[in-house]
Length: 230
Ligand SMILES: [Zn+2]
Image 1 (cartoon, rainbow, N blue to C red):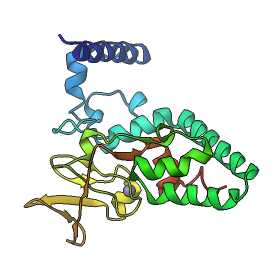
Image 2 (image 1 turned 120 degrees about the vertical axis):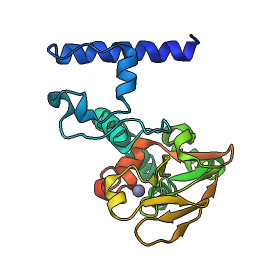
Image 3 (image 1 turned 135 degrees about the vertical axis):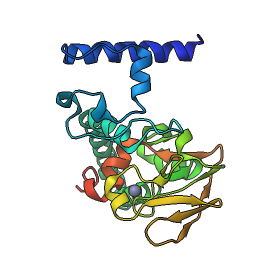
């Protein structure tokens, strides 16, 4: 077993033990069983007390995390991530208050995040340097499930990269998906399921960066524009 596989196995074993602790009456799953379950609907194997409202599978056939999985993760880390995002935005606002032209700089900063779910290192360095931010404070490398044949497809509504699975391409936000951000792949074209229009991909390079998930959730999503609303 290589190191990565061993780490995965250990995490699965811990998760399985946690599940048993939360729900002792439930049968204990081995690491392999738990991993296999990630591809089965939650409602068929996770006790209702733990599952809550969540339904569906966690991993798509392509191994991409499903929206259920993303939502679970965001909910799980929501409070901590919200606090961190708030703190960071507050810090930027305070810096802007103390420097000349700070108001305009703060506005550009907010505008930049809203318009650039995907960007490259250079404009970020220029914008972030006077704000005492590093690129990694707010952006990350693209994930494998966000790239298809060297291109990324941005959600028309929140401008963040959509998740690519074997069956479709959709924004991880249910709000966006309902607003029409769901696409199918037809003859290498990405076609909107609702209006039939095709969507152009954005070429991904080594320089490509994506806004971090928590910032996306708290700044870009129309349903939760919290952190930047002050
Ligand atoms: Zn979206």
